[in-house]
Amino acid sequence: MTSISIHSLDGEELEAEAQALGQILAQTVADGAAIGFMQPFATADGVTFFTRQVFPEVRAGRRLLLVARLDGETVGSVQLIIALPPNQPHRCEVAKMMVSPTARRKGVGRALLQALDAQARAAGKTLVTLDTKTGDKAEPLYKAAGFRTAGMIPGFALDPDGKAQHATTYMYKAL
Image (cartoon, rainbow, N blue to C red; front, side):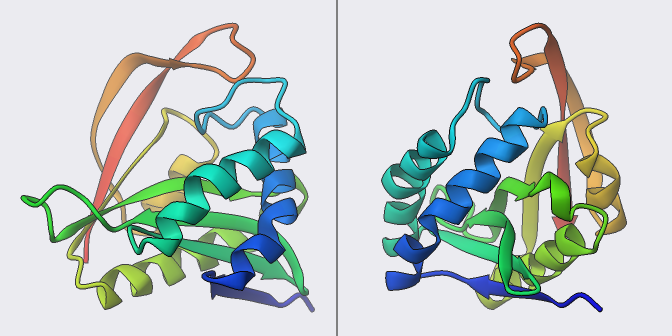
């Protein structure tokens, strides 16, 4: 039987997870996930992204970083941006939801989203927003977790291989 655990990272835990997070990000981009990066994308690129961009935001209290462990191994993560403009104190935004391709379809994504909801509520948020590649594997997961489609923008970004543009779907969930 597999065991999924979700942890909110801060302090020294961040650096300890940098390599694993960088590797999952590289695997996810190589698998075609449209999460803002282009191929080729190495683990070192992922480590740099987390250590230079994500970890400082977590330490400053502007972002939460949740990791998922499957039988003790870090296999996924999601970020919750909680510091938004002054006219949006009730809202937070999901960023960089990713699950290692080898750990998909095992409940990891669902567990991350459930923990994300709890963290958003604990932070006093009543609205969660996200965007995802239209038709992506994650879109049904978001819908199953209670997110509703707000709209779609065609030609929003390039696919990670740079060969085509894709649409993006904006989604929201009231807590």
